Amino acid sequence: MGDSSALSNPLNAFKGFYSMCLLIFSIVCIMGLIATRQTNLSADSHPAAAYVLIWVAILWLTMVEGGQASLVGLAPVNKELYRDSHPISYKCTSITNKGDNLDRYLLGRQFMVVFVVFSVNVSGGPLGGATLWGMPDWVITVFFQTGLAMILFTCNVGQLNTQVNASHCMLDYINTYFALFTLWVAMAVEFSGLVHSSYLIQMAVAAMAGKKIESNEDPRTPAQAAFFWIRCLYSLAILIGCFAVTLQALFQGKTTMWEGVPAWLATLIFFFLMSVVGMLEGMQIAFFAVSKIQESERGDSRWAKKTCELLFRGEGHNLPGFMIGRQLCVVSCMFFVARVTSVSIPEGEDNVFGVSDGLQEFFGFGFLGALITTICASISWQLVASAFPIAFLSSPFTYILLNLCLLLEATGLCGAAWVIAAVHRKIMGYQRDEVYIGTAEERAKGEMGDHSSHVPVGAGHMGKLPAFYDSAPKSLQKLMKKDPSVGEYLAKVEGGEA
Image 1 (tube, helix red, strand yellow):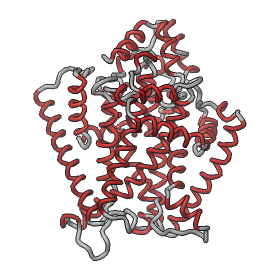
Image 2 (tube, helix red, strand yellow):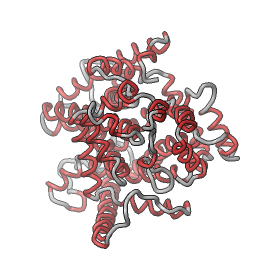
Image 3 (cartoon, rainbow, N blue to C red):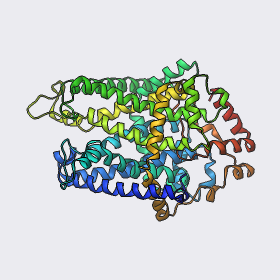
Image 4 (spheres, rainbow, N blue to C red):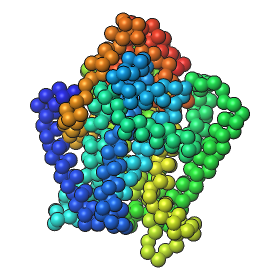
């Protein structure tokens, strides 16, 4: 998957065609809703502001998603191999390969993904009761009220197509100052301390797993430790504040939740959707973890066995298929969470907790929901799944969600991503990384073998995923025979020591 060959199959070509038709229709509808002031931002300000925000956000999302695949994938590669051919890529990996910077980048990037998706929803999400150009009610319901138009737009344009290209053309993809800027922003988000309460969860997970958090850096000095703990505490205070404001707004009916939904039900929907997002985030980590171990070591649970049997059936196409369906599910849930958590004060009513109008307006930007979702519905679940992948597989909800994701992928709704990826790759002239640095086996033969020390995994670390590079496990197994250091790494993963 990820090559233009993915579209050579007649069924895949058909899916790509009809998905592109749906995507074009969705984009036209979203732009029309903005023009007629029927989205959250265009209704409160000017359509021009919504147009600018939605396209800036979606284009930035392409780099946030593609940058992750590239930086994680290049972490084990000797960066001197591409120092001259890709100088900006070299600058990027020089940052992420230093100490624990890859973990820091992933932490900041996770918040960026959620916040950008929330921004897309604020600028293009249709208001309740929105209509357009006399379209039939069923079209309005399917594309507007269920959010299908926004989901197709975000997944196909902003996420999946970039992951396809970046997972094979890592060097070319991040060899731009846009990638370097995005990397610095993610590092700045982490440095700000906004998501530092995630480190408290990290420590708790590592303690539950009975393992020490491995680090590539020296122990903190007293000053560094004090600065770290101050940020953890203020991040925790901000997170508690976000929950307080959001729940207060929900119980008072002061969010963009659909009219007629009682406060108690809106609150239950909020926590349910957060749990679904968390399960989906953790499942991808657990699935890639168990893909590297023997079948006999995947647990004795009936549900774990059923899940693994379905996941690795046949030639293993269900694993990348799950990743595509999972993306649809996660984005769908995030759009609903954004609607549930975005604070909106009805005309004539008091602000939440009596705050100033300026602060109340800030609450409406979606920042609160984005921070809650990042920490409580994303990072925390990934950390737990990294430490306890087998336990994660043993839940019946994992099996149910896996089937749902595979069903969504089978519909072909994201077939447009492959078309966009092929066009984008052609325009930009991207080439596979092997053209520049050879295969992993060739690098090993030339005594420039990959080294995995930059990719810490296991208890206390967010999972490092190979994105859509679905042949990664097989390549790692082949490379293990060529490069002893990779064999040692896989042994640690299998034993849960990494």
